Amino acid sequence: MLRLIIGIAAGYVLGAKAGRARYEQLGKTARAIAGSPATRALVRVGRQKLSDKLSTRPQLEPMVPIDERTTILVPQDQLRR
Image (tube, rainbow, N blue to C red; front, side, top):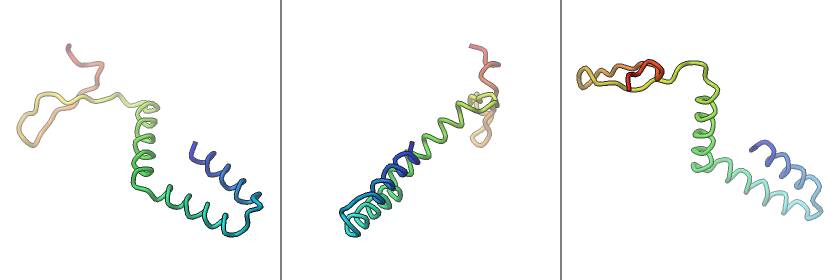
C-alpha cells in the first residue's frame, strides 16, 4: 500500500506543472511522512501482524512461570482449557 502511495506521489511530482518548488514541497512531505515515528510504528505493527498470519509455526502461549526468570511456552493447540 505504501509503495502504491509513493508511486502515485512520484507520478504526480513528475507530471506536475507547478515546477521545482512544488516538487521540493512534495519530496519534503514524503520524507517527513516516511521518517515519522508514527509511520514506522504502523509499518512495524503491520509487518508483525502479517508475519503472524502467514507463519507456519504454532502460536505459543505463556504458561505458569517456574520461577521469576523462567516461563514455559506450549503451542495453542496443546493447551488444556
